[in-house]
Each structure stands twice: as C-alpha cells, then as structure tokens.
Length: 374
Image (tube, rainbow, N blue to C red; front, side, top):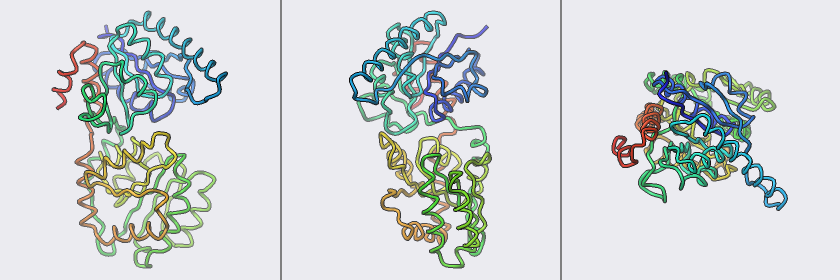
C-alpha cells in the first residue's frame, strides 16, 4: 500500500529528466508511487526512470510568431490540458511537481485548476519560460540556484539545490589534493553537446602557448564532439601532452574527483556537480542559451569564490593560457577555491526536495516549509 501517487512532469531532455529521476527514487524509498508525464523525447530515459507508469501528454512550445503556427500550438496545448485533466482525475495524485520544459505546462495547469497541490523545481538561477508561466499558480518553487529572498515569487521559493547523481556523491568523498612543484597537473575540459566545439579549438591552442615545463606537467581529459575528436587528439599529440579525448566519459565524476582544475560551461547540472565534489573551475557560460541562465549560474559559484568566470567572447587563447598558467603556479589559491566550491555544494538536495514535495502533498503552508529549510 503506497502513501499515494506523486506525478512528476518534465520536458524530455536530460536537464529536466535527471533531477526528476533522482527525486523519483527518493519518493519511492519513502513509500510513494511515482508517475512521469513527459513527451516522446523522454522514451530514451524510460528504462532508468523510477516510474510505475510514464504518460505522454500533448504539448507544444510558443516558439513561432506565425499566426497559423500559434493557432496550432494553442490547439495542441488545449488538447494537452484536457488529456492532463482526465489523467489527474483518474490517478488522483497527492501532488504534482513540474521540472521545466513545455511538456510540464498542461499537467501543471490541469493540477492547479483542479486544486491538486503543485510545485515547481527550477534548476537554473534564471527561471525558464515554462516555469515562469506556471510560477504564479503553484504553491511552492524549489530552486537549484534561484534566490529565495528576491524576485516576485520569493515568498514561496526555497533554494534546495539540484539533485546530483550517486557517482557524484561518491566522488565528493575524495578530498582535493593540490599539485605542487613538478607534479602532474590534471585538467578536465568539457562543454556538453552544444558547448564543446569552442573548447576543441581554444584549449589545445591555449596549452600550446604555455611554457614547456608547464606543458610537461599536464594530463588532460577533454570532451569533444565526435567530428572534432581526431583533430583535438592530433593537437595534443603535437604538444606531447598526455590526453584522453572523447565525446562522452562514463566516469566523469571520478575524473572530476581526481582533477586539479576544470574548464567548462556553466549549465545547472555542471555547476551543481563541481560544487558538490568541490573543484576549482574556470567557467565559460554558453553564450547562446535562451535565457542567459548559464551566466547567472556561473555568478552563483563565483560569488562564493569557488570559480572564475569569463565570457566566451573575451576568452582568447592567450587569456586562457594565462589563466591556466597562473592556476598551475598557485596551488594554495586552487585549494582555497576547491574549499569554497564545496562549501557552496548541496549534496542533500534530493532529500530537501523530497521533504518539500511531501510537505506540499500534506497541504502544509509554505511558511512552515520555508521555516524547516531555513
């Protein structure tokens, strides 16, 4: 006998699904039945997602200004709303939680109109468009980096942090070990599927500008797109720098635990993981993010002293070389940055988020929830 059904709604990309997946495991451990509402893109995650059932509800994004396209979108959203209302009426969930992305709009709109306790989780420091459209209707908002003391929804926002993978929690047990003198200096570079292209050119060029004694210390892990991997490998071979280059590393958490410096983008999951593990970073926000959320995420970690941030447009190979060289020469500063990053980490985010969901399901007022998490 379960304590009730909790309906999780998430867009079909990893950034939305992974936090929902972590919460799903925790809620099931607490005795709840978990159902997922998403779109067809999430089918590739279905095998790992801890849901008793996965429901696909029609939805669409308001991306076009074309009147015909807007009419089609409006009709699809209306259809999705009716499907979601029927689904909620049948399942009778004790709470509905949205994780962003346009597929969350119909189920959250249906839930709020039917009086079902509802809340949102926003990964980034800037609220995405779908969550922004729903924020005024839900009882509470959990934030990965959202400030809870400012903004129009401060009264119902709690900064829980972003849930991270078990491998990251395991990696966080490894203390930072500075590289001194002539010891090997491990550098990890990654940028996600969209953001890695820039690093494939910038990083090998920057490393070629380092003094030879510094280059000899380097041990590099670099994520690169498949079409760039051979070129990047060739560059490192010319530099005679030990390097592993791949489009995907299954052991990235362990590599982060062993590294001395990270050069990366500043997506919400990335910033959350490097702060939980506690590693110094040079953050380069992806400049084409729709809401410029990566710049805001970076600012949250820079404010603690755990990272440096530089805009891609300002990051010439010479500047990147100078930043890496300065880091290699100052292990004490990197050690302080690592400690500051770890201080900002939220390894308990999944548990805090689950506490919040359970409180909402039990119809506790937001003042009680904010008091518990203060």
